Structures are given as C-alpha cells and as structure tokens.
Image (tube, rainbow, N blue to C red):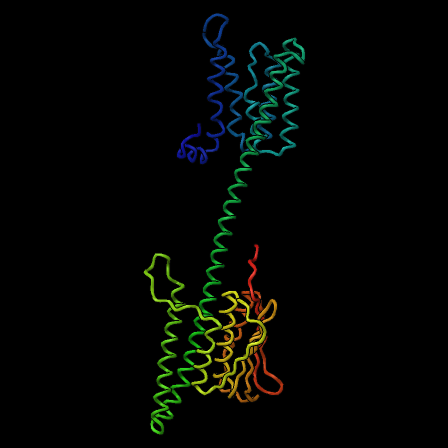
Length: 393
C-alpha cells in the first residue's frame, strides 16, 4: 500500500531518513525471530538484535553511495558470520544494499556484485555451519542475494517504463498543442486571404464606380445614377462576403447568423459584370468537359480569377481581359490575360495578392505562375486539381 502523497513528499526531502527507513522492519523481524522457541516464545536474543541494528547504520547513506555501502555492509555481515557464527543473523542489511545497488547502479555492476555476494554468503555460511554448499539453508541464502538483485532490477525497469510512458504522453500532448497551433495559424492565413480578396475586389470596384459617378454627376446624371447603383450592389456583396468569412470565426454554440454561400465558378458572370460596369471588358471562355470540381478547387479558382481581375483593374492600364477555363482529365487550367501596356502601371502594389494566389493553389496541390508578357500585358496561369486526395500524415 503506497504512502500518502504528503509522506512521500516529506521523505523525498529527507534522503537519510528515507534510506534508513527499511531498518525499522528489519529490527522488528530480528527481534521476533530471535524470540521464537521450539515450543513457546521467550525473550529475544538482544545480541543479535544489536548486531542487526549496527549493520543497518550504513543504510542511511545507501542512495548516495550504493556501491560503497553494498560492499561495506557485505564485508561487515561476512565478518560477523565468520567470527561469530553462533549469533550471526541473516545478512538482511546486505540484501537491502544489494537491492539499492541494483535499483540505482548499472546492470553489469549490480549483477556482478550480486552474484559475488550470493556466492560469498553461501560459502561462508556453509563453512561456518559445516553444511554442504547445496544444502537447503545455504541455497536459501544464495536465493536471497539473487532475489534482492533481481527485485532491484525489476523495480528499476518498471520505473523506467513508467517514466518513458509519461514522457511519451507529454510529448504527444506537446505535439497535439503544436498541431493545434499550426491549424489555427493556417486557418488565420486562409481567413486573411479571404478578407484580402473580398475587400480588395469590392473596394476597387466601388472606388472606380465612385470616380465614374463623380465625373458624370453634372454632365450625365443618368449614367451617374447607374454608377451609384453599382456601388450599392458591390458594397452589399462585399458585406455579404465579409459576413460569411467572419462567420467562420463563430463558435459552435453561437447564435446562427446570416451567411452567404461560398462563391463558385457559376458566379463568374456576376463577378465579371461588376468589372464591366467599372469599364473593364472581360471575356470568359470555357473549353473541355466541365466535370464536377471539388468545392475547394472551385473556391480557389474563383478567388484567383477575382484577384487577377482586381490587380488588372488597379495596377494595369488595360481595357480588355480574357479569362480561359480549360477542363482537362485531371486538372483545371485557369488563364487570366490582360492587354495592359508595359511600363504604364496605375499604381504600385504590395505583392500580397500574388502571394495569396500561390498560397491558395499550393494548399490544394496546385500551382500558380504570373508575370508580364513580352508583347505587353500581364498573365496569370493556375493549374488546379479537379479532385482533392486526402494527405496521410
């Protein structure tokens, strides 16, 4: 039965008391053993009890010097057995010292000392009691020494296994925390990309349409009115997409809110309509068999097209953009090309849009290449898988 936690902590802070503690039951057993007679109990043989107590004194330092204490107690017990065999008790202190050496020392040292001690104790006992080495009493002392060493090694192995199991559990918990943080970071990056795409796209269109409305307000109020209507539509669409994206941050027990559906390639007409209303001509062409796409592929393709058109409208002096969707056997190829003139950018960009496109494509196993064309304009090419294969970690 294990000691209460408070006692174990107290003993851990008092090494000498903890080391000497096994001497108490040894003294009780020695006193009881010497008080047993053939027919009844009698007064204990105090001489043997005193010798047992003296042999247990070095045990107070057994955890500090396990090998030295084992050799010291063994030498004392063997000497007592040799010179005073008539009062020499069982070498219990040596057995405890052998157990401690097996528990704290190396395997080779423990078994070398343990086997040597077993042979020495058996030989001295047999010689001083005129018994055979293979006699019952002699073999019993041999078994005691071997058992003390084996018990110490078994307890040590059990402690090492428990420590290893605890280390594995702690390592698994740390890895779980690292994985959770990694997933949270990836989710934050994904949400940041969504917010960037939504805000950059719609604010660009609102800015362009506001400029048109401001220019036509006095000269052509009807067209200015239409531009304001487009601003209203784009701002409402931006709010819907922002609400859907921020809604991903809700907890499961939060009150359900209004969430817009995830944009797909069937929504390209609405996307293109917004750009055409701001003065950019966009032509969409589809080739191949438009097979069913994974939702992540559709969303990624939509966002890449949206970002490419937004960059064209913001940074390129282009009047026409061509979007080509090529459906292959295993991949969807998206090409966005504009006719902007080299060397005439509208404004400097931060490069976050291109980085976001590449990150989106890589996240589902695709690729994105982008750059200016020699004949002028800018081109973005994305290769996206039609279906996603789960990754086995």
